[in-house]
View (cartoon, rainbow over the protein chains, first blue to last red):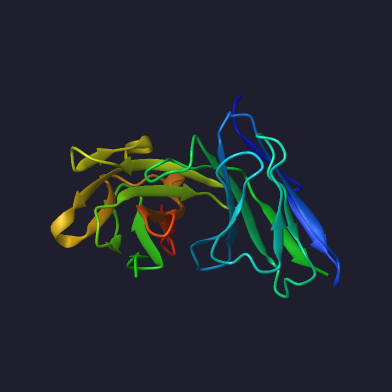
Length: 114
Length: 114
């Protein structure tokens, strides 16, 4: 089955630690996205990638970093500079990057701070 | 600035009753419009999408939405609620700004009372 996988399902971060969230898709999509979801709020865009080896900052990129070395993979690193990282993180992909494209979502990773 | 509002952060309906979830957007250009559903601790799943053409859009699980340009609305309805409809629902718009982006509303949590 084609889809998006995210791992781990739950992730715990200690103060000062960098952690990496995995996102893999086998939909052959060019574009990939990372969103942050907080209770009672909509999704906020962290980073997006239109194509391999390219990525752009979204609305709340500070304290996060990404890479896009392979078409199917778009890992997100939450750095120690992100002071409030507790949230639900969603990865998504779309066939290409453009207005009106449907985004398909992974199951999410919940990040908690110890 | 472009935005999406969803009236009512929480809606309760009885099983078998009409479901009406409201979405209004602000945009100076015609947007593409989406409704997504999110079950607890899961990613988002596309319910339906409006691009162009017929303003009444039918989606999965018996949901439909009508695009009303004059009212800048895209309300989601279902004639008869089922227990399995209990979830969080997000309205989203896709439009071209400084980059092609999707703006999500804050979400409406739907409860279905037996």
